[in-house]
Length: 127
Image 1 (tube, rainbow, N blue to C red):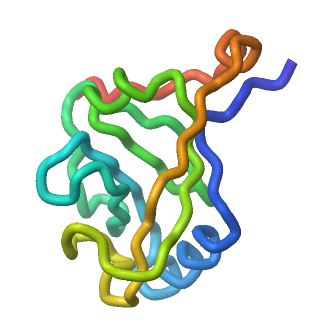
Image 2 (image 1 turned 180 degrees about the horizontal axis):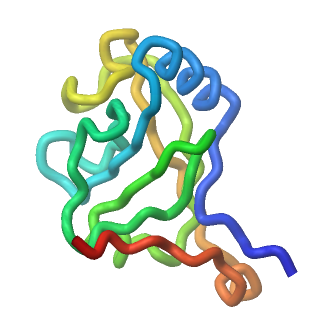
Image 3 (image 1 turned 30 degrees about the horizontal axis):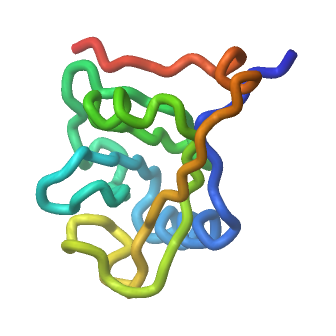
């Protein structure tokens, strides 16, 4: 049986990722549990943000890693993430899409019991 992905993206998000990749090269995503950007996912040039010990990679979008703060993962580990985009500027300006008047956002849904029993493994940052 095929493992259930924890992460997907809408076509709007994929289109924006394509545009950002053409301008900046390889990308990465990080979603924190609060502070400056709240829980808004952030897009950086690959290596432009340093993940912390025990942060969790829940999957890839177009080959680009999507990392979560370890505490946020504990809170949302029973949910599927769908990366989407909205017009406007979010809580701040750290993410690469901000100058283009866009903001990444996540749509959540809880896994069914059957899905939860067959989830893809996550990658834990161990350094």
